[in-house]
Image 1 (spheres, rainbow, N blue to C red):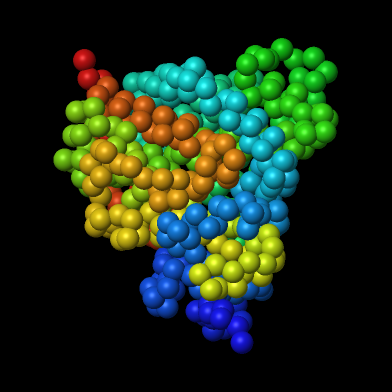
Image 2: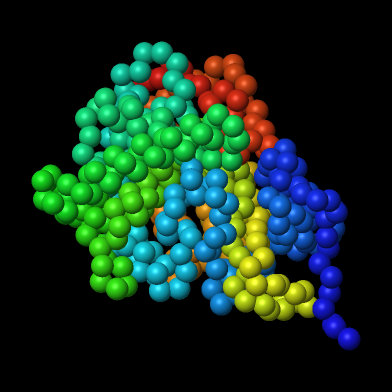
Length: 414
């Protein structure tokens, strides 16, 4: 007789439409309903196990039990991630490809991106005469920063053009219909452009900075000592460019937090900007969940996991788990003052270890860009928030304030 427990199971043929309707609350709603941190549902026509919590995250990032190959739905690969990217690799292939990204995360290169972000905000806002849409401005600023930092050559008008293409990849990744097809066309256009640049780098018909990603990725070799395929290099370059531009979502929420919590914003001017932006990353929605597949049959807490089963880890829910976070629905940046968390309790961009795991290689970039941005907005300019719609819907992925945050009366602080 088996000692295995039956997973709490949601009834019904498929709940993909419910996921689209409920957005970031989809897993939390069912976790609360079943009073369980693990349950089974059906999504995109197949069984899916959903997890939320610190111990569940630790399980999810066990490379012996889960793999990323074929985990992301095809429509997400064709918009957000691209086919063949690092997110879908495992074992030695993943370690080699992840090392390519981590080689960029040196102190000098992170200092450089902080310098770029401050320069671009100054250039963009110091001459602003009218109201500024912070989200749209951030996408423009971050596109220029991303192109400069990766070493992709561009003219000013080209940067303006690529703002929309890069944005499509994350703004419409979860959409259906015309917006989804627009995102796919934007990815195809961007990949073709980058493939051409990589070809030129390899043929030495273009001079680029050898210390930057365009050059280094173009000449990176796989575990067999072979250069990566052109399309793979293009995908991985977009896995730098697209996430940097997507930080605009966090920037918009950071400005919302400055409006909603002025006492918290004052902490930035007191030198606690990093605590503030960490709480922004915990409190506001960004990624709803991440996916993997069971690598081989195993049992955990008397629950059976069968090989190949789609498994989702709730990132937003874990960042609002009352077991981990005291008063999780309150914005309180001082919680990070002496925070002693681990790679499985604070997971706004995914969890696990950087070196051997699947934690986002760009997390340090995100933190530095956000810190420089809130520092700039707090100390170098003054501005007002005109009347606007600050509400945002948790059913939208990605979620954004309705107004995108508008600021006006921008003045340089002397």
